[in-house]
Every structure is written in C-alpha cells, then in structure tokens.
Image (tube, rainbow, N blue to C red; front, side, top):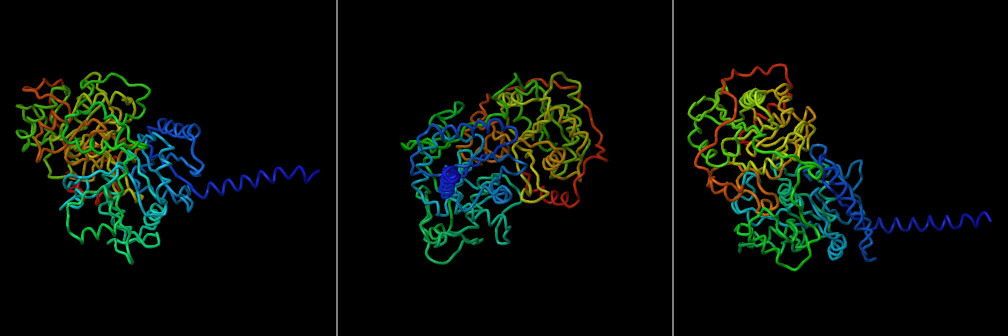
Length: 573
C-alpha cells in the first residue's frame, strides 16, 4: 500500500523532470531594458506578453521556454555592451540552452508572439547572427565617432526601440569577449553616445564568422578557413571592389529583418507625409510582411497617469553665449523659437544692453565652460526667485534650436516638485567603476527648480574650462539623481540621425548651424513659424555677477577630473 501511494508522486516527478529538460533544450530570453521611471510601463509590457503566451495557440513545434526579464537600469544598462557582463554574472540569465535573445526597450511592442516564434523557427540559432530594423547614416557624423567616414552609407546598425534578435551563439561569444575585457577587443571611444551604432561596430570589429559556428575575437576580423556569405542582401553596396566584398564576408553585419519595423503600419501622427527623407522608410514598409516587433513613440515616464498644463511661461530659458556670437547667433534665436520663450535670458562674458545680454563676470574660455555654466545657474536661480510659477530651467547654447510647445507638453508629464534631470543622455566610461551618465549640453539640459537649487548648493568645477555638462552629470549622479533620457532632444543636426528615429519621436531640439539653414530646420523639423520681431523678455532686471566661489562643495576625484579635462574638445560637438 505504501509503495502504491508513492508511485503517482514518482511518476509526476519524472514527468516534470522530462518537461524541464525539454524546455531547457530550447530557450528564448526576452530582455526589457527599462528606465526606473518606466517601471510600471515595463511590468504592463511583461504582463501583456504573458497573456499572449496563454491566449495564442502556439504550435507544439515551438517548444521554447520563454523567460522574460525586466532589466532595470542601474546607471549604465541602457548600453547593451555594458549590460552584457550582468547577463553572465549572478543572474545567470544567459546559458548554454538559450537559443535566442530578444533585446527590447520599454517602448518596444511585440505585436504577435506567435509570429515572432514562427520567424525564429525558420532561422538557425547556431549561426553567429543578429536581426533588426537596419538604420544607415547618410554622411559621416561625430555622433558615431565619424565611423567609416569615407563612406558610412553601407554600414547597418539596429533601431533598438524596434527590438533586436540575437542568436544565442553570437550573444554568448559577445558576453565572453566583453566580460573578459579582452586586450584585443576594440572600443573606439570612452564615450557612449549611440548604443546601437556602437554595438554594431563592436561586433563588426571584434567577432568573426568561423567554420565550426564558434566565434574568434579579432580586431581585424580575420580568421581561417572558408567563410559563409555574411553579406546581408538588404545592404546596397555600390562598390565593385572585390576586396571590400570579401572583407564584408569576414565580418558579422546586422541582418535586416522585415518583420521588425520602425513603427506600426501607420506612421506617427506628428509626421508629415510630404517629408522627402521618409520616402525610403515608407518604401521599405510596402512589403506584405507582418510586423511582429515594432517601436512605439516614447512617452514621458509616468505620463500615462497625470499630466498638467504647461506652457513656455513656466520654463526659464538660460541661453549661453559669448561676445563673438552676439550678432551671428542671437538673431537666429530671435527669428525662430524666442517668441515662444518669454522667460528667456542671454548670458555672456560681455553685457550688451542692445540685445540685452547679462554678463557673468567671467572671461570666455574656448572649451568646457564649467565655471561659466555654474555662474549662469546661480544667476538664473536669483531671477527665478523673483518670478512667479517658474517650474523648470532649460540651459541651452546659442546655436540650439527648440520647439517650445513640444517641450512644454513633455514637461507637463513630469513632477516639477521633484529632482528631475532631463536631456539627451551620454555615458562616460560606463564599463568602469568610475563611469557615469550625463546630459549633453547642446541638446539642452532641463532641471526642475528644486534640482536647480541643489546644483547651486552642491556642485563645483575642478577648473573653469572643465566640460560643464559632464561635471554636472557626475555631480548629480553622486547626489543620487537619475539622468532621464529624452530621445526627442538632439545634440547634432537632423542629417546626423536616421530618418526613422526622427519620425518616431517628434523632435524638440537640434544643435549646430553649420552646413544647415537654421530657419529651414526650425520650420521643417520643429514645426515652427518664423517671426519678424522678438517677444518681450519677462525676466527680472539684468545684473552683473561676480565670479562664483565654489569652495567646500562636491568635488571630483583628481584622476577623473584630469580625464574629463582632456575630453573637453571631444564634447564640443
């Protein structure tokens, strides 16, 4: 009798063991890169995917065990390269049984889990390969470290928000290479600017196809034996150079997947159908293939709950300029976005009543501008204390173009009573213990007024010419303030970004006037109408400021301060 009672339990245990082994034989790891502020959105995302697993009738042939993991950002997990050691460490998310890894962002949408499994079932998980919606540069750009500057148009990189699919073979090789910090693994910069392009370039430079399906790290991409044809048929190569084609076959290049789309079939509502730059993207969408993965427009974190009415009158614009640009740049601002920014002030090394500009009391320096920026923040806070209902400060350069209405709508979805730090996020040495995030200055940096007070109280400059945006980011990270990324803010010009990215999220800012018509950029990309005369300034009376005494405040370690000082020229994009 006792044996008969045990027999069913033994059979159940055997069944469960076999089931686990079956599942472990074919596993899919779906990773959601999630900012802290979007935690609720990411949980909803995960729950929706689990509901699809239940409601969709998945064929038995697709015997995948699907693991969904929300990877909350600590401070550097927005770059996949720097997140890789985490996958292999204590979490053990990636193992030998993982056939596929799908990297998503919080605004990636899985339209059909069944459709995705069908696509993966048709492909070889043992190949060193990755799939996504391919983006291309139209010209060499500093945003991508001037990669392939002679001809950047052939090099594909993935649109991360649309989702990227990796074979387990490739990602395990990549994790091993990064985790070991191999001496021959090349990083072209200590700066993280565009995580997608930097990932594609790292794979291209450091992992080569091999006969047996394993990878071999090589800075030159060379290897022994015959090579499989690794040139994606979707890449248009206008070269007859056999050496170039042979080189591509010795490299791993993103494979363009038509089931991964930059957006749903209907383009974002803000976009104009007449934009010439979207013609290529529209043509790609004409294929009758279902989009099982696609990006959704970015929303402000937490915006699904409460947004408050916000206008340009709630924002104080501190515009950084200098004497040599007064006549060249300030008139452009006055003709474009100034009428929407009634709370604006120009801060310069020279006070000019004809504009007017407010002197900081500090001489101009060619790079960095740290002391000048902190002086501007202190002077701005004095102004704000005399004004009513200022909720935000935006620090911008005199060659930055803005859509104030779009900025106002965005800021209305953040709580201005909290310490909020918004901008286009860059990273510095994210692979190292002393790495940190910061918002790049040319795109515009937004601080809530409570955070502005904290900055004035606690942050300091190692030298007057230290890079201001980096010092500010370092200080705020040390104070526990998160650098919240806004993809609609841009450090460079429209032509420096893939058109799909500009289509997905209505741009709020661009930076730099060279080789562009600022008025044309403002009208076409920022939805603005040109004005003939500026609106009146609604700020307090101009004052001159004495140089700031910033002693006894939060200081950088000497070694890091020296490193940042040497990086100043790189940052002047």
